[in-house]
Amino acid sequence: MPERAALYRRYRPQTFSAIVGQEHVTRTLRNAIASGQVAHAYLLSGVRGTGKTSIARLIAKAVNCPNAKDGEPCDRCETCVAIRDGRFLDLIEIDAASNRGIDEMRDLRDKVRFAPSMGQYKVYVIDEAHQLTTEAFNALLKTLEEPPPHAMFILATTESQKIPATIVSRTQRFDLRRIPHKGVVAQLGQIVEQEKLQADPAALDAIARQAQGSLRDAESMLDMVIAFANGPITLKEVDDLLGASDWEETAALFDALAAADGAKGVELIGRLVDDGRDLRLFVRRAIEHARALVFTRATGHPPETASEQMAAKLSAQAQGLSLDQLAKIAKRLVETEQHLRTSEGTPLPLELAVLDLVTSSEKVAPPPDARRESDRPAAARPPAPPATRAEPRRDATRGSVVAIAERRVVTEAAVTVGAASPVVKLETVRKAWGELVERAKERSVGKAAQLAKAEPLAIDGATIVVGFGEEFARLLWQEKRRPELEQDLSEILKTAIRVRCVRQPGVPEAVPDDPMLRAAIDTLGRPDRIMEIE
Image (cartoon, rainbow, N blue to C red; front, side):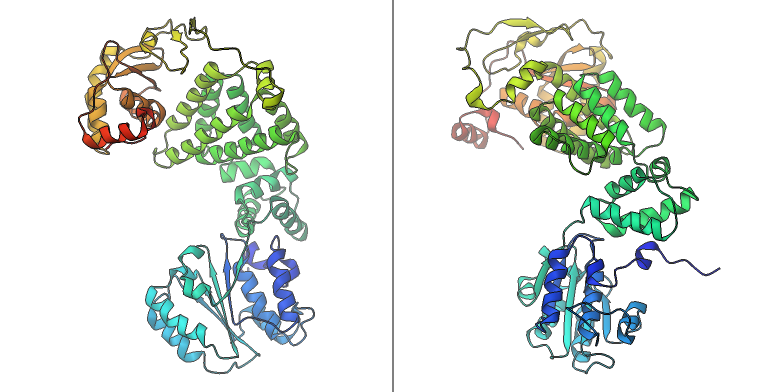
C-alpha cells in the first residue's frame, strides 16, 4: 500500500491566492512580480506554520513561470510542476539549523555565480536563517551586497530579532501574522470536504483553537484525529486525543470563581486529573475564556468566533464578573500556567490559584448592584462620602475579625484563629519551618534570611498566618512572593495551604542596618514600593 503524505504537505498552497490569512504579503508580492520589480532578497518572518516556506516557493514559481499572469504562477507548466514536485534544480533550499557555518555560506557564494539551468532565476531559500553563525552571516552579507542579476535570496525565520541589522537592511521584510481563527476553521473544513469525511463544526473549532494561529499545526492535528477517530470526527475524539478540555468545563471553572465556590473549583480540577487531562492545556483554554469574557464585558457582545451556545454562556458570565475581577483572574491564570511547567504534574498550583481567587472574591467582590455601579463612568457616580474612622467587622465566611483601616491593610487584629478547623497543627507548621528556610536558601539567601525571622502565628482553616517583624518584608511576601510560599508549604505539609502575612504583634518597625536598603527607603519614601531585597 503506497505511503499517504501528511495533510499539510498534500494541501500546501500552490498559488498566492491559496495562502490563508496573509493577504498583506501576497498582494504586495504579486504586484511586484507582475510589474517586474522583484527584489533580489526577501526576509519572511513569523511564527511556525503561518506560510513562510510556502510563500518562498511561490515566489520561486512566479518569477520562473513563463505563463505567470498578474503575478500568479500558472501551476501547470513544466517549471511549476517541477517546483511542486521538488525537482527544480534552480530552487535551492538550505536548512540553516544544520548548515549554519561559514563553509556552507562560502560554498553558496561560489555557486551563486553560475547561471540558472532551468529557469530565469536561481532562488536560494534559507530556512531558520536566525541560526546562522556570525561568520556565516558575514559571508552571506557580501553576496547580498553584490548579487548576480540571476540570483534571488529568501530568508525565513521565526526569530527576526536575531537577524543582524546589516542583513535586514539589504532585504525586503515581510512579517507574517498568526492566521485568524475563522481562516483556520474554513481551511480545515475544505480539507474534510475534499477528503470526503464527516466532522462536527465544534471539533474543527477545537482543533483551530489548539493550533493558535498555525495552520500547519492545525492540519497535523486534523491528520492525527482522522487516524484516531476512524470515522466521523466529533469533539469527544478531539478532546480524547489532544487532551483538550471541553469549553463547558472551562466555563464551569468561571462559574465557580464567580460564585466564590472553592470546593466546586477544586472538584473540577480533581475530575480533570482523574481523566488524565493536560492541566496546562486546560489553563491555556481558561486564559482564552477570560480574554473572551473581557471582550464581552467591554463591548457588550461576545467575540464573533464564539458558537451560539458559547456566546450565550459568555454573555451570562460577563454580567457577574467585573473587568477588575477578570483582570485578576487572567493574571493569576498566566502565572499558574508558568508554575505548571515546573510542578512535575501536580495540580497544586492550579488548586491554589482557585482558592486564592475565590478568597479574594470573598473579600473584595462587590455585590451585583455595586458591580454595575463600579462599571459606570466616573462622572456619573455620586461623590464618595468623607473618610470616617475605621470600624472592625466580622467576615461571615471565615469568622475572623478584620480591621478595615484607610489603607485597607490587615493589622495585628487579624491574628485571631477563626471558627474554621485547622487542616494542620500549628506546632507541625513550626517544626517544618526550618525545612522551608533551607528550601528557600537554595534559591536566595536574602529570602531565607527573611523567612528565618518570620514566625507562624495561627491557623485559620487552610490559611497559615505568618508574622513578620518588618513591614517591608511583610509586604514583599504578601504581595509578590506569596504564591511561592504557599506552594512550598503545601508540598512540605502535603496539603493545600494558603498564607496571610501580617506584622508580628508588639514588634516595632526595625531600622534597617543595610545602608543600601536604608538609602532605598529614604529615596522611595515607602518600604512597600521595594519589590526585591537580596
